[in-house]
Image (cartoon, rainbow, N blue to C red; front, side, top):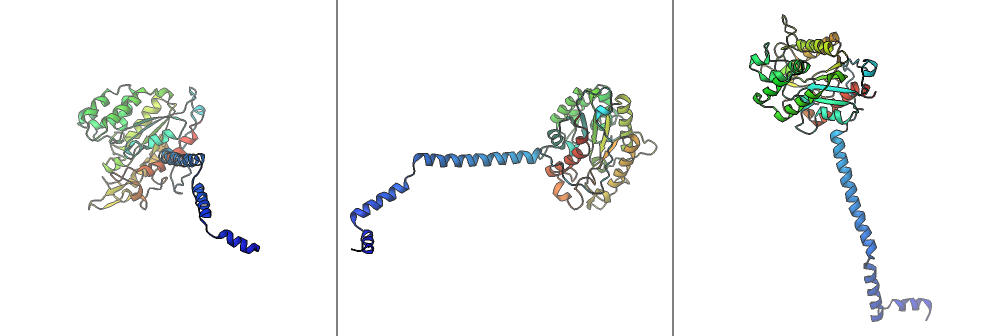
Length: 347
């Protein structure tokens, strides 16, 4: 038998050969236990890593601020803040920032507020004294106790006046009679405000959105221009009472951002195109920019400085077409971080 015939003979199926073949097949299907265990552990590890990365991404998407976000080239920022240790003799070595504001900086309806985003992304100490639902200006010329508008106690003028005097009891009493607010948040932020030693505060950020414009608050009430029913009166009050009592504090005013408004025919348009009480939002912004310069305040332009505009507002504005969603808040926080906080947070 030649070699080829021998190989052919070996391939002939016999009962003995079939048993051997079946045994080899069965043995090949059975994996050693340590291999099975290793594969199982590897699968679990991959699931665990995937879960960790997802959670880390979720957290970063909520709290990490990308300060490389581009801004509009025509931004009107005018910021002259300097590190406090170069400015005041009694500097304590800690950068302390107090934020007064309303909905845009204080809203938490869809996650973190702008203030919380700022707190998560700076080494400075930030006190959140925002009161969503409040405004910068008062509703009437009389004091809150006489006007019948208890919410006026939380307008910037009276909030600072009472803080300066060390007595926030009127604010505490008013919370119960104000409708449509988060009473718990108001109580917490009042407690924060009450705890602050303003002799150690370096910066105040005034961060009110377009709700004053929408309610018809004038930028200047001629004949009574220093009354807090108008923006000029509130800013003058802050200039007089902050610098007069705490000359070591520097102040920055953050402008309102883009918002929608309704004209007399009920058409929804950008605030720069709608007159409310004879003024558009653009009128208010121009006045604020000029007047803050007169008072020695820095001016942070959130109208042109953040890409929430006529073309993008539908993507970023929620609720009353003023307050931004979380992505919009991130852009605002990035702008404020870049223009203000990054330059003063490290001493």
